[in-house]
Length: 314
Image (tube, rainbow, N blue to C red; front, side):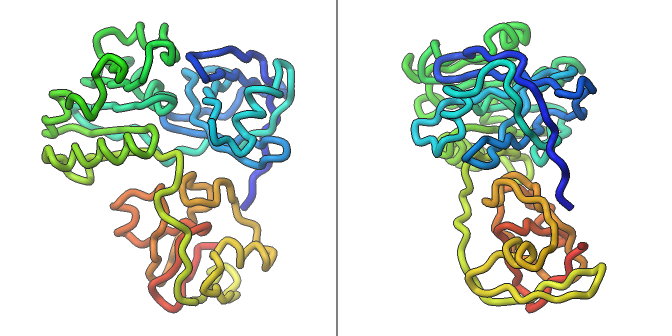
């Protein structure tokens, strides 16, 4: 079911490293905003652009913070937030969702590049609060790109900052702890090239896929067509045909079935739905390998079916 948006006020807007703007949001009603856990994100509804997803980077408080980088290839969302939004303006946002939770491990390595720091900073602070064993590696091109400098400073020696302009990129030097996968979790976020290279390095050094946890900014799975199939709603028994060029989400929406949609690229997890029978053909970037293997849920906006029929928990 679709949920009603939250209405918030922009109570602060400030630059936070070259090319980034930090927005502080408070509930317009004066009530506390819903609680969230490290790794959570919200949808921001941007006039004329639709929904965009941003990680929550605030410590637990009565307000939310998001840090937005001005995208050179912006389709309008980041440009509007940078250039048109002002303090005191109203925004509509979703409640937080978290499909990038902090994993449980005896040792945690956090690798961030650029604005990929936003979810990992909150994770690092949560780990520090419970005196856990962790290291946060942050990769930037130049020092002027550094965001959240005071919060990073507060984390002390657990933070290692790498500047590629000084010859310290992931392609030039592999940190020693990345070669030591035993009893550790590797959590990473950043641009696609950084993410791919880090994943390949980890696998080369003996990390298991189950130890890797990531969040992507762009889908790696093209929304490809496939064979036609049917979906059935468990609550009513109604069946709907999904054509070769259609998505499950499109078919259900056309039939007047309300479902939660956001990115529509298989990245945000808004439309994850239970599967009671049938075999999904997973084409998303949000479910873990374990969740895919269980075959008991599906991302409606992009995934399809390997079986002739899927029975959905709707």
